[in-house]
Each structure stands twice: as structure tokens, then as C-alpha cells.
Length: 83
Image 1: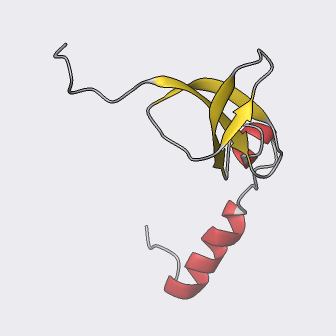
Image 2: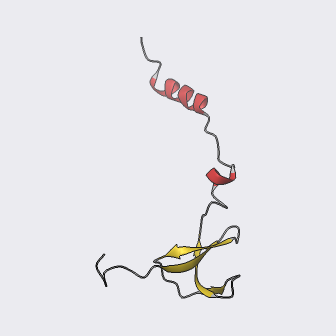
Image 3: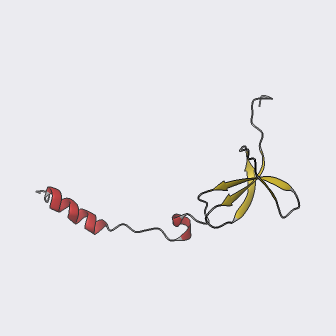
């Protein structure tokens, strides 16, 4: 790797705005906010809208589409296909 061309890769705390859960990982993102972490160190804090704690796919709250209703609506609009 060439020196001086890569961004700073450092520990960052991400916080889910919906649930308030925090997790520590590494990133190149910078932030003006910071938080004291459980290990006694201070890390930059980035607040995000969605994480695996609040995303419907991961929480099991995903909506199921009514595919039968969609097919019937299509057939009413355009007619059934002649075979």
C-alpha cells in the first residue's frame, strides 16, 4: 500500500436513532460528536437512522405483500392472458 493516500481508519461508535442502541466498530467517518465508551475511552459518535436493531427485515416486522390481490388487480386492469 502507498503511504499517505488512505483515509484514517479508526474506532467509531454508531448509535441507532430509533432504538438508542450503540455499537463500536471501525470506520473512516468523522464526527463532531463523541461518547465515553464502556472501556473508558472517548470515541466519535455517529447517529444513524437504521441498524439491524430497528430494520424491519432483521426484527421480523417486515410486511408481507398480498401477491394474490396484486395479480387480480392486474387481471382486472389488463384482462387475462389468452393461452
